[in-house]
Image (tube, rainbow, N blue to C red; front, side, top):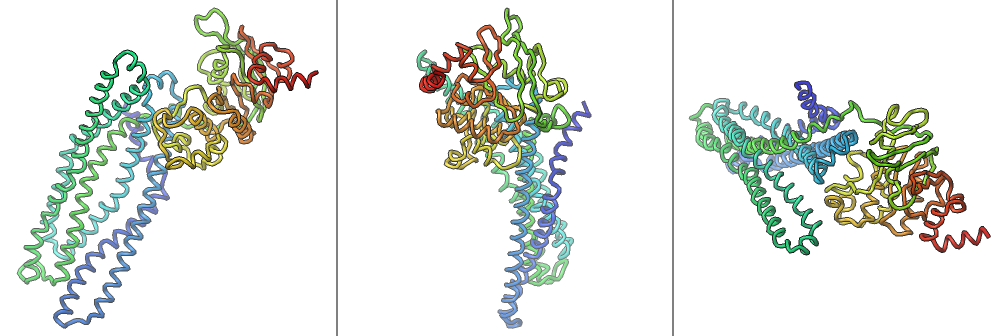
Length: 582
């Protein structure tokens, strides 16, 4: 138990260690940035002194011009280092999000499918949302480490240099803001958690209202459904307001507490200028000290506010950290291309009186496309799912010399697209990537989505909604195809991929998929036979479950059921074929 907890806690450290180079650049630019920050109040103090000296006639105006130019270039340098630091912090956050999503995706592939389905329809969306919340917390922590942590140390050293006694007094106030932030940890975390839970309930209620709108209307329950949805919406609004109050209204309070020390500076620092205090100050020292403390107080209030942001991220971290460790120690890389051999495979559902699939035998090589078809409810999808090794079957399926499921895992071998559109409420890009880095152009082109994605309001960054609800049926299917092409495997199983597209798009999809997957074997399960003349082989599943392996031409000549189905779907092509045979 302790070992598992320790291993999970190490995941956060590993996420940072993966980005050593980026964090090194962040550290270098951050240190330079903070050195420049300390110089800024020094310049401001001396500018005040120079102005006083010029008014008294003891200094020439030209000296102020030189000082002002130096101040300008210092500020320019500080802002440039700030830009570089934030650029690398953002890169760190983006890479971390992709890394976490890829790890979680690998874990999902290794989970039992029934267990995942029991989690509910919005489970995947919630996980992705938590990933982004955690990564945002890590980004803020990395940013504030330099923007606040290192800056506070630098400012404190600056203040101690001018007057260590006064500094001890004024630095009592920022820790008071930290203590307040710690005391508010529980209500902030609680408000964040309740807002997330309310958002999930509202999302489920929205999907229920949309999916069952007609049923509610027919049975006179529409008003009741609206009232139930209104309650969910009201609860969500109230909890979001409470969350916002706790998160946003505290920073002004932190700043007031931290800035209270400025009153002591006006009093005791003024004594220093008058020659009656602990140190002998001039106007430059007083102005520089006050400017430096003001910046320190503002930074310390940011640090207190950061505690709340990290507490919010901590809620999400505890929800997903178990999924950041794959069930197996390492993710399985794609298997190498090889020959697929299916020998005398049969399958019977438990309790069924007869086999759904009988004596299926065929072999295929890379670049082959095997068409699989049959009558309604003939077992086409069942045959495709046998390769996922979810249920025991008779016969053998080998990849090269390795037995599938025993010597080689389906996870490293198979890319599968089933009937359900497993899309989550994130961007088009995230739905395709699933955490994997790389260029999407080829996958979008292969799925005939390149032009449509470019026309979306935010391109590939456009959020497609839970289950891809903002897309048409054909677009949903093509997003799934793009995902398969992006995460290419040597054995690709497509179950009715062209059901929601027109004939022209079907032809384009077939040709582009084949062009991109020359090293893969494709099992094309479909009741539409338009592209079957281009396949290497066709498997026909008869009414008795018997599988006939042949070619499109031979089946047209020898199998009456296949010929009838072809004629119904392609009357003109069938007539042309008959003329050629005559």
